[in-house]
Image 1 (cartoon, helix red, strand yellow):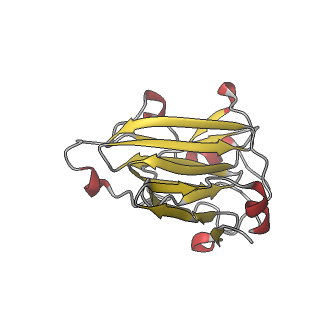
Image 2 (cartoon, rainbow, N blue to C red):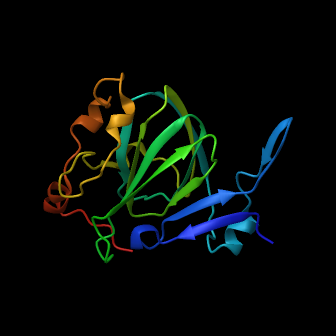
Length: 195
């Protein structure tokens, strides 16, 4: 029997899933299986991961919204410590939810995980003083295949909880993320994810 609770099709967006693992805790601390292929498959997520990544960021750092163009990745993301607001935007041109997003707060305390399939832009903003963020990917990172979507695209309208980053000033973006195009600009370039 699966040790996971999985909620599928969040905000009506097919493919997204929130995973709640079983946490075994007592006075000594806790134990949790962060990934079990059999349990995931039993819950409808038959995935093969080829790369694990981890990052550490301070409050107000916003990473995203990122995707790979020719080698799209599915990502299973979680927060080891701290808190982030995590976002996935549906870029699958043939999807009825194209251009819609789903956001969720992930913390080291709840240990919830978020699965984002291929064909989505993904990003997060750090809400705590710092956060350690980990993710498993279904394809390798290809540095010449990066794509980005503007984090503040008004047509998508992500409601980032920026009020929770008081004291950090404005969001902190990489130079690349400062110039990411809007969805309309991506469409004008002719780029399409078709799944």
